[in-house]
Image (cartoon, rainbow, N blue to C red; front, side, top):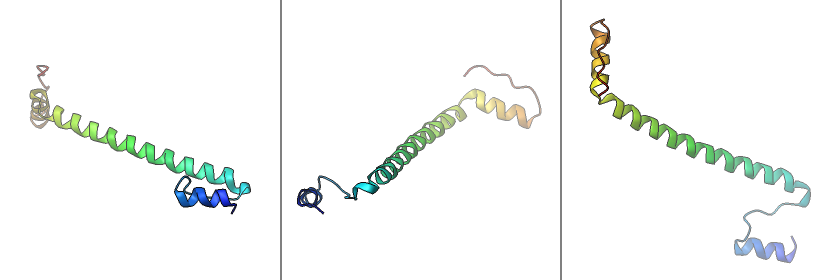
Length: 81
């Protein structure tokens, strides 16, 4: 390791040092890992929003009417509430 590379690593300016021949492969692996983590965060947030929407929808008068109509084997009479 060259002196400036070692110093950069020791100071925390870089978190990984690789030989030039491996640079593309390592950069790709890091980018892929970061992308996957970002997607997981987006998915987790989307699932939270979906859960909140389902809870809110389940508390409506129309939701209760839909369940009742299903159990009573009749057409529901929705009131948009």
